[in-house]
Structures are given as structure tokens and as C-alpha cells.
Image (cartoon, rainbow, N blue to C red):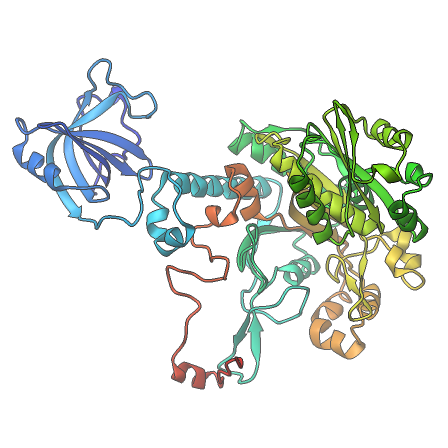
Length: 589
């Protein structure tokens, strides 16, 4: 063994022991005789001392090493001189007096500082990811991820779940996002797809009688990237047979509540989690993944606006729209430029504009004041509880546009004004989603969740007459403005599944080609079942206080879906293409 102890475990009780340590030179300090090195491994830091009087050869080696050299030392554990203890380190009471040393490997000067948590350009970090992963911040994040996944496995194992791996090479059955395709050498012209999720396999495991399944599942989707999205991601996939919606929600809520208490006990967490219908969430927060750590709720003022002479309001209401507002605290003094920026944000979400009313010490100020009486403006203030110093932002349009625009403004202003407690985890369930969404381009219905989701039993009679009014037996887990999981009670009856496919304009022939295995399986005694799939990357990022899931994934892709360290994707040799019967046709410029 290269070491008898880690660099994070020696304490005062080890004084007098002869030890061997190995790790990286974290920091080196030459005091003109004594050389002090903080030796680092994954477990921590230990200060080691090179003394030219007692170990001249070791001191010579200590003089040659630099940061990030890989070093092995032998020595005696000693108590640090009084007053020189470092109470910020687990090993801060002791140091190791080096008697022998060996450089196991020298190191070039790193392209960025490793022993400090300084901001580093992400392109550089991803190019040298193996160095970035040495930094304390990244090691903490990956250790947290490990603890989260271990807790999930232990928790579910204790409750009768078994972990089953499902295929990575599978069939392309488009379910929303684009598939990654893998050509088959043995069957020219045919392709595997990488799984967007184990959805069909976990349902088939329920048909197979396993009743409680889970998997730390790798999923791949060829979609545009953002801070909380990667081409490949990890989710806790779980499915249960003989359950209803409440059974799934209760199990997952208990799991995540216990998980937070175990791995992040310092975080604030309120239980039980609130439950909002989709309609209520959109109406109140303008989002189906609302951040509940602060108020600034959307307030319907259509009844007041109905008495207004303001043409913008009158026209919106006459066309079946509504008027809503949010109260922004202490922002009445926003400048014209700042207000225009907010209005542009509303326009970017489809609104024709936004009306602002500022309640300042010297009176009410609004670009629309000449169209609204003081009584009307005061009525809006009374409805929203506006005080002197507050700003009202109002949008008049179709309900979806109003909710989208004000929801985006609420999220942006909540972040700007730091209204949310950064230490709080505000979990919630959003339930009763629409079953279908109308695809205006294709003039057909799309599945709002996925085509295997069961409709609410009470809405079955609407499938033929009014599909847009059908609610799904689906549910989302949200936290701090992020969707962390989606799930549903599944269809387990062939006739109903075929009917849903037909509503989605998947004809009988395509049903058989794409999903024949599922339809046939449902004829062999499929039990009622349901489940969900919490995203591990997003959840760990929230726990770690990171804005980007790339910082909790060991080897992520960048915003252009490139691995800068491995230089992937990359060209392949012509003979490989020939073997797969493929020819590259570059897009025309």
C-alpha cells in the first residue's frame, strides 16, 4: 500500500504514530528552512513538515516539489505547536514530521488554480475536467451525489423494491424528444435507439409481476441544451403495481423528505408538501413549476378592468381574455428603462405589452394614467394590497398568454429582488394536468405527458366529445421553480391504450409497428400500475446550490453537446462507415 492513512483522518489521538501518506501537493510554503506542505487526497488535507536538520534528503525532495505533484511521505504524527492549530481542518491539531519522501509523479503547471475555489472559464474547466474534478467544490458535489443515490437505493430496497437494469440499445418509438440512433452492423439499414427513458420496460416489468421496480437510469435525448438539460442524464426511475396516485405521491414525498433530512439537514423543508392542480398553479403563479418560496401571486382584476374605459383592457376582455396583475414590492422608483425591460420580457412571452402603475410618495404614476381614473387605479391597489413604494404590472390578453407573461416576470423579479430563501426547499405536487395539447401546426392532439398516461376515470366520457377537457392521471414534483419529476398512473388495458393512440392520430398499422409489444402485453393480465422518475442531476444541483447541472455531473457535455475533453462527437474512419453501410452527406452551405 502507498499509504497507511488518508489525508483526512489523523487527529491528536494519533500523535506518536509512524504513518505513510500519499496524495497531491495542495499548497507549499518555504519558511527559509522548514518547508510546510498541505498534502491532499479525496478525504482531506494533512500538513506535513520537512526539516533539513532531521531529514535532509526528504527536505531536498520537499524543495523540488510544486503544486499538484503526486507525493508519498513517511513520518511521525506530532501535535502542532500551541496557537498554530487550524480549527477549520479535521486534521488541524496535528502535523506529520517527514522522515522520508518520494515523488511519485511530477506535474505541469495546471491551466487554472486548483487549491482555490476561483471562477474559471467553463470551456477551460471542461477541457481539463480531470483537473476541475480535483477542486474542493467539485469533489463535494460528486460526494453529495453519491450520498443521494445511495440513500435512494437503501430506502427503496427496505420497502420491497428491486433494482432492474433495462436496455440501452432499444427500439425507436418517438415519444416527444428526438432519439439518438445507433446503426446496426448485423442488420444493415436498421437502427437501435438510445432510451429517452425506460418507460415501456418498466411497464412491462409490472406486467411481468415484479410489482416494485427502481433503477438509477441513464436516459438520452437529442434536444437543445440549457442549464438544467444534458444530452444524457440520470433519473431515479420507479414503478409500482396495484397502486393509485396517492400511493405513488406518498412514497416519493416520504423518500425525498427523509433524504433531505439525511444528506442536507441544514436545509429548510416544510411538510406535508402542498398540492396544486395544474389550473390553480397556472392561475396563481403563471407556471406549472412554481417557486413557492415567495408570494407575488398573479391576481385576477378582470372585474375591475371591466368598468374601465382603457381600450387595451376592454378589447382583451371582449375577445375572451382576462386582466391580471402582480405586485412588486419596493420597485415604484424603477426608471423608464427598467420598466421597458420588463415590458419587453412580457412581449417575449407573447403579450402585446404590459401596463405599469407605480405608487410613489408623490402620487400614482403610470403611462396609462390618462386612460384610468384614480379610483380605478386605487381599486387595483386595494385588490393587490399595494403600498406606497410598490409597483403593479398588469397584462391583458388570452389567459395562457397572461399567465406565461406574468409568470416569467414573477420568476425574474423574484430572483432580482432575492425574495426566495436560498436555504429553503419548497417542494410541491402539481396534479390534474391536461391529458392532451392541441398541435396547431399538425391540427391534431398531442399527449401532454406521454401516450401511456391514463385519463382521470371521471373524464373518460369526454374522450370522444371533448378531448381538450380530459384531465390526465399525471403529476409533477416541483421544487424552487424546477420540475424535478413527472409521473402518472398508466394505461393497463389494450382497448383504452389503442383508443388513446388513435386520438393522437397513430393509426392501427403504426400502433402495431411501434407499440405492438405493449398492446399484446396488456392482453396477458397487466395489473394497474404507475410511477414516476425524479431527475437526480437537477435535484443534486439544487442541494449543492449550483445553477447548472453540469457542475454535479462528472463528465458533462457543453452547451453545444460537445465533450471538450474527449473531443466528442468526432469523425470516424471510412471503414467503420462502410462496415455499417453508412454514407455521410454533409448539409449544403
